[in-house]
Amino acid sequence: MTAIWEDQISLHSRVDPVFDTVAPAATWKDSDAHPTNWDAELGDVSLELERDQAVLPTTPDREGYFGPHHFSYWASGLRDHRNLMAGAERLGVNVQRYLDMGCASGRVIRHFAAQTPEIKTLGCDINRKHIEWVTQHLDPSVVAFQNTSIPNLPLADGSVDLVSAFSVFTHIEALETTWLMELDRILAPGGMAWITVHTEETWLEMGQGWPLYNAIKNHPDFTDNASPMTSDRVVFRWKNDRSYSSNVFYTWNYLERVWGRIFDIVETHRRLPVFQDVLVLRKKG
Ligand SMILES: C[S@@+](CC[C@H](N)C(=O)[O-])C[C@H]1O[C@@H](n2cnc3c(N)ncnc32)[C@H](O)[C@@H]1O
Image (cartoon, rainbow, N blue to C red):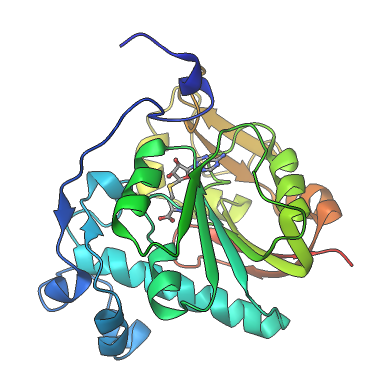
């Protein structure tokens, strides 16, 4: 297919997708053979399952997340919803409006819609297919919109209390500080951002079985990760002519030196859940 200009700053902008879907999460609870012990991690989720009757995306329509393990896909979003709400509570943030940047087909925002419907939920993604998926299948109260790789969101200053970006800044090879400034702009005073990153510790730890390692070890620029990163910001680019095609690692020093000027870094969490670290950022007073 001939390249079109939108592909450089977005994905699938000209498709009108038709989706197959997977039955709601409750269908899969007792037959999901994923190694995570969700009962131990989440406790009894029967109420949450009952509240979320929406269909699930097929594996290709959810960025491949959790392969055939449909319940685990759902449960991982519930875990992240809980982590976000617990983080907001620790920081005393009263969440009335929430944005998930890079929401894909709604792994996390579906739980805001089902479990905390009093919160106005927004999701954005550069991939039009994902926005269509959310719009066709999640509660009409959820507002989903397509953005581009150019750091600019069609939201008013100070209009959200909580922003998350799960596995998004791990792929932003350019203009990441401009994105941070944009998130700072839309956050209300006291607002909180929850952003997952690959750090220098991820770099040293990743090995066989890590989804990222399996990809990166085949990159022509990769030699080994037995020694510390050789620069503060390491980027593996797969393609130059399209968005969302790279993997990025940061040192803690860089995050503090660069990101810490834009936001207060109030918490860091290692390996939450497993393969990435979390920065909890607060709008500076
Ligand atoms: C690895 S997936 C993670 C999806 C989702 N956050 C989750 O945790 O299930 C990364 C997502 O971010 C989107 N994305 C990448 N760069 C983006 C950007 N600059 N703005 C918004 N979405 C972006 C991709 O299209 C993709 O849906």
